[in-house]
Length: 166
Image 1 (tube, helix red, strand yellow):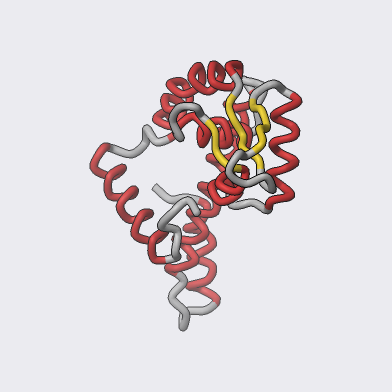
Image 2 (image 1 turned 90 degrees about the vertical axis):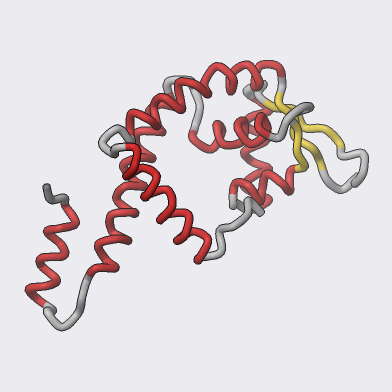
């Protein structure tokens, strides 16, 4: 069974037989897959009134453990966005009642972000359906293929320096 990338690779092989386009196949598929998965996840999160990034912040705070708070700088690192972007995101989530902004007692120049009771309840309500949705998205892969894919992606991410959330 072929995919859209196979057509592109065939065209390159025909037009430039001197260049092996296999890297374009991998990168193209990963890019297309990311777009398709993001579209599906956007729809899922919208059903809960959230943007994908809002769930990411809620989930990051939730998995940090009680009291479900982190320094804003830690959220910048986890989200891989600028401090200005995280400030904007936190402002929007405070307005929705999902998080609170608290002074950092150890550093008066920074703030801590904590899940509200509403934010905690929402992320807990969403977690199992979110995992089920992701399982649905990966259902075409048998368990062995899933493990191989996860291992290959882990190796590639680590080789590109993505070894920590910071």
